Amino acid sequence: MTYLVGKIALDIKAGAPNNGEGRDNVGQVKKVRVGRDEYPYVSAQAFRRWLRDSAPVGEARSEVIRSGTGKSQQAFTKGRPDRFFDDDLFGYMVAQKGKDGASSQRDTVFATGTLLSVAPRRPTQDFGTMSRGFQAGENPVIHNHELYTAELAGDVLLDLPRIGTFETEGSGFKVALHKDAAAEVAAAGAERLAFRGNSALRLSISERRRRAALLLRTLTEVRGGAKKALHYGDRSPAFVLLAPIKGGINPFTRVFGLRDGQVVFNSDVFLEELAAWREELDGPVHIGWAPGFLGDGREIAADRLKTVEKLEGEREAVVLGHPRTVFGDLADQIEDGTHDHWFDDPTS
Image (tube, rainbow, N blue to C red; front, side):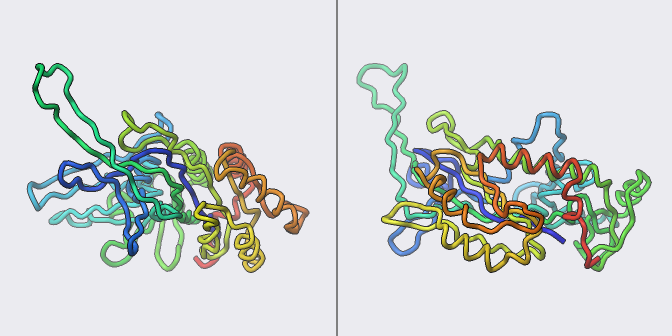
């Protein structure tokens, strides 16, 4: 089995892309405090929402169903991963009491960590007023909110064999498709198989390739975030590292570091991890790096990576370029069947 694992980073300039609960009439960004230091962050939930919303317009999204009132409310999607890419890749929980066999759950196929500032960055507070149309001498309405500049980074993992593969048995919420949905998917031609200890149904390889490629392309075209009227900025990842690894360990979580208070890509860390896990690689490590992100860091890293030995068959061990180009090419390779073995799961 093969996972695509690695790191993504956002380059936030004077922005407030993800906000927490306001206090004392101040809109506050989300942040973690460690001692006296503050680290702004974008939650995984927010980034996944941006990613879902950034998919092509013609790609159907799963409907959200809301029920109950007050503290007894619940909301869930349709829970049909056969129909909707977001139910397939992002998971869901459908819990409906009193409806035999209607409850189901799917753990995420695309796991996303919190996008946390690599360096401590204290948000600043912006002071604003509303006085348009007020009479002379009337006091303006005052409002404050936080913003910051920071490089945010988080871990990601894509479990390729689980794309388009849905468990149909197991206790409690281990079932991804309830009985009626499973019968419908099977009748539509899905393959029956044993998958990681459970019976499952699997979509065609062409659809599984398509969904993997869709995710990769969308990842480089992310739009979204809060405060766009005041702090519009690019929210697509400035850096994406994805490595095909057998088994799902992510050895590249520490590739960013600090030097004189500035964020840098630590080539020494990357190269040592690459050497240590080389036997577990199932193809080249792909690095999409937007020009200008981290100054001349990309040029410095490219020079260091020239020393990396090639893989078997004289393939480059590291592919480095613009995120859109690197992962557009990888998406093309997935769609044409070059990496079909990544979708296999020999443990099944």
